[in-house]
Image (cartoon, rainbow, N blue to C red; front, side, top):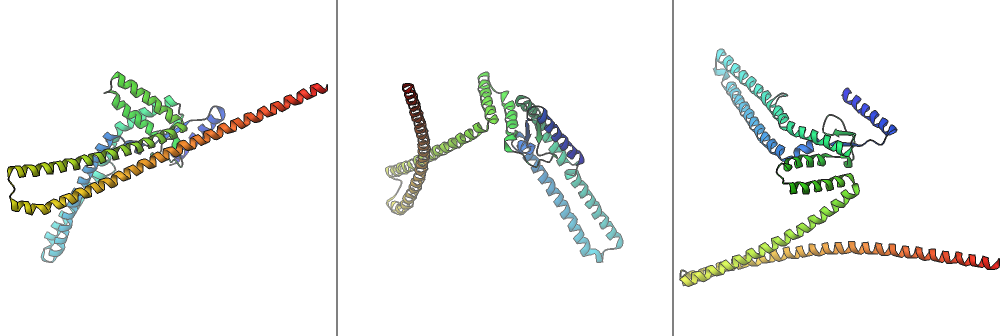
Length: 342
């Protein structure tokens, strides 16, 4: 703990000295836990390891249940057993308890299989993160990059200094590059440059966020429309199939008159089901239309507001220009009057 405290003080001294002598220091941080949980390969291996750990826990619980059964049996039969048999069973129970404890330490101890396999699982990703951090620091001229999930205590950190998502993108791109053609690589590089520019500018970040939200809203509307269309087609196909089956049965004469009479009531529930489905579909369509209308109204309000602001600005500029012309005319008139008097 003292070493960490001294390290923090030293870092603050370096930062203050740099700020006093040269330009402002650029600092960033990452969240290693966040990065690991968002790497697909690590998540899959982590799930497998958790399943293995659960199996180990079940084995330990089974051993403990067997030991408890032996203890209960000994307690119930102790009055009927000789001292030698009692000692023998107690020795067996102690041996099984020690064996279970050793197995538990082997699996879940400080240097157990779970800890070692977790470290082995995380190390390749950590190496990639370290390389990505170095590349980002050199490209964007960071002076310090910390890991907020390590032992170093970070009491506060503004979100704009978090470069975890940038590190994730670098790792993902490295995996993708091996399978891309030259044309795809050029497109990917252009996309990377655009993302880097957005990372550097808070205004661009906010604008990109708004664009993403609008795109998500449009995609949702399109999905609703597609779902409604698919439901309509499905109902149409079901009705068409039912009519075709009825015609075939009537044509082949496979349905007798009594059966037809008995089958008549069964048609009603199907018709009711179709009506219910159509009513549900109509409600869904109305909701979709309401959402679309709300979205259109929102866009209309935004455009109207922008036009009003622009109009106000133009009027202000015209008023200012008018005042400037009047002032200039007044000054010219005064000068002309002074010249006449002289």
